[in-house]
Image (cartoon, rainbow, N blue to C red):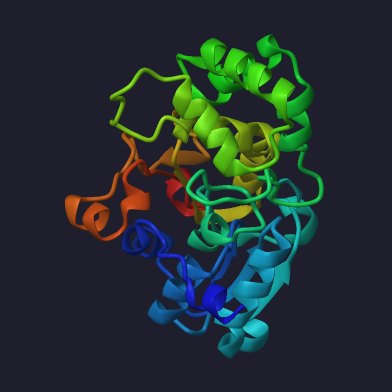
Length: 299
């Protein structure tokens, strides 16, 4: 247990997030994916006299964020809910909402969770009890159903070959662990494929499918945009082209109204230094939108 406590997630693009949020005395922010509390901590470091509503669907993440943010006492309000329920716990206007859609380091290294193909874990991948069972899906779905998930959510071009291999291997013995699934996927690739691990897209697709991540993002974004006050900002950090497209389209549609303005015409990405220090940041894209100040709109 102590080892897992010591594993702490490095927040991505944290300085940019803090600059965009501009924490000042009395402001209130929603950290909709609080994880280990990295972005929230950075906001407090800029200004301690703020309040944060911390949300995460993962109960373990809430436990850990409480530990890392305990020194801020009642200035942090914790909710173990899916961010699609943001409008249930935010009953007044706030100054900013941050979504960091990536997995935390703790989730990746937790052997009970099954998020990483580099560990020998149960084939779980669930963020909470509402997630669909990856183990059941892999061991019962048709080849076409498996291939469709891998292609739709992971952009896996060898989805049909992988699906056939999975079905063939599960007939010998049920697929119960991440390491066995990763090996099966790797064997579906030709020798010498080294750009990324062959199982990367498969695991990403299964996780996104199991947790309904894209649908939840589509529901949550309009709600977040409605709860920010004039001058408030919504920031989203995504790690997948499908996530980024949902954010891009929703922000562009919203910015057609005079009530909102895009801050980022193009996504902000980590610089070389951050990528070298935090490999998990390499695919991150940040987009931000602001609710226009009513005084400026009237001028």
